Length: 255
Image (cartoon, rainbow, N blue to C red; front, side, top):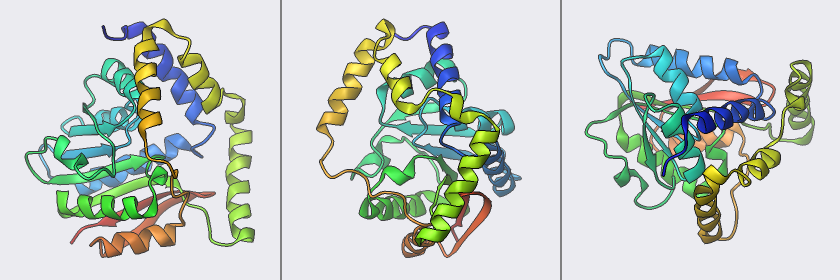
């Protein structure tokens, strides 16, 4: 049995507020990602986009609003977030259940042509460095010439003084916008666990998390290190197009 529309709407709206604690100027970041994708796909009648780590469809929904002709494939491994997205943002994307970085994850996407763009926001930092490099190589193979990866995330500076400074700028922005008053990640998930409509999905989520290999993520790499990995994967052109504190939008264009 699926999640009701009312339940999905409530949890997605709470997710949106909760995420404002973590993504500095989140709407600004979304807008820039859409600007970049719109520019890269100008003239494409029906651009094909891949949303990596889509969660409940936050970025996919905004891209669908900006680019109504786009075909969006949204991938995530979390059954709770995927079901919320399928229900609340059903028309925004085709949602795919897959673990980004697994050996065969791209085989599950059902792509019938090359991608025009791949996008992500606050998701790829969970990958270890070897998995990130492998993912970048896979994306280079999936994108058409002139296509790009557009990734919005936190990219800390190398070295304590600069890292502390950029993080401080982000924190001050959050305080001024009162984003720090919203519920946090742990509170959101604790409440989700108590919702009877989501009980089966939450149990499935916990089983998957328990089955994941030990070792944890690789941590937040600097933008410079991401650029090195992207070039190693075949992207010659890499640049940041937006920054606020340590939050950036990094773009890698394929020749």
